[in-house]
Amino acid sequence: MKDILLPLLRSADRPIVYLSEHGNLAALLDTGARFPVWTASKTLLEAIGGRLFKKGVGYSGIGGPTIGDVYKIPSLIIGSKANALIFPELPVVTNSEFADAPFELLLSNTMFHDLDYLISNKRHSLTIYLNDTDSNVRNAIVNLDDGFQVLFTGAEQK
View 1: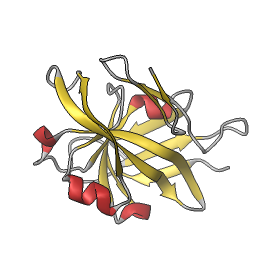
View 2 (view 1 turned 60 degrees about the horizontal axis):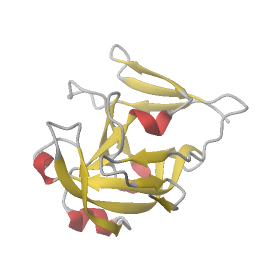
View 3 (view 1 turned 180 degrees about the vertical axis):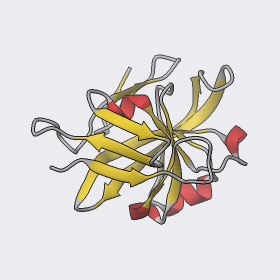
View 4 (view 1 turned 90 degrees about the vertical axis):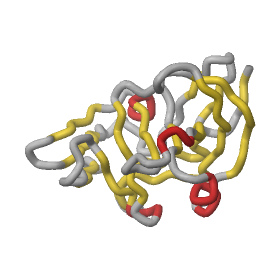
């Protein structure tokens, strides 16, 4: 497996990448985020295969406590199909407060758990380093404030 190199959106002052395998959705890498957040319309989320998993889940960390719905994206691909991180059954929390954001998806730091990556403002790139022992299929747990856990592979735990 090779390292994954993604260009950053040059006009943005934050690390935003395009997800080419998903119609060039814009995604912000938020190094302080605990879980992925969908900021665009639910109609667009459903158009890329997202399906409702749980309604009315409480969470915080984005301007204070709020409530959103948990959707699952069947397979989120970061990179190209030949060289990518793959997140099967990726849970995302919806948040309409960011409707005017220049990105549709907030990628959380927890999605890159146990991986090294470099955000280069000078080169306008994001490099994700994969060692021979690193899997490109990522499985992790999203823990929300109400005790609800979602495993990226699809199992629900309480």
